[in-house]
Image (cartoon, rainbow, N blue to C red; front, side, top):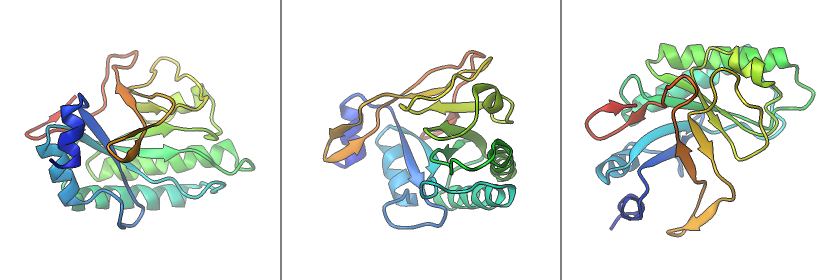
Length: 195
């Protein structure tokens, strides 16, 4: 039994897998995506964050967002699926405006690629809840770290703590919920993109 089927048999119903800023081993591949979907799990992709202390700006956001969209297309994600930006561990000396410019450019590039951009809010994101809400994202994912609430929106994914060891791998357990506005993340499932 492959690993995805094992998770499905244990009651799990979705999976988020990392894609790199450049395709590399240990990241989601087209074959793994097929295996996950054929096991009955829904799937979305999240782009790896840069090394802790990274410095965001508009040009980097555009570059990273374009790469995320290209990799999602190469794996076979159809338009409309959520692709997530991992926003965390930003250089503490960075200005909020630089983080905002990065996020806006990333969002625009992923949207131009045909995907539904989402934002994972992790530790050290440097933005307040209002600043996060003012971004163009419609989808937010709350990390298990101490992060601000998103006013008038909330989160569509919530990461629980602690991580667990299951089936030989370390797993961050997340729950999918509608946000305050009743919106859901956009999953890839075997025959359709479903809310």
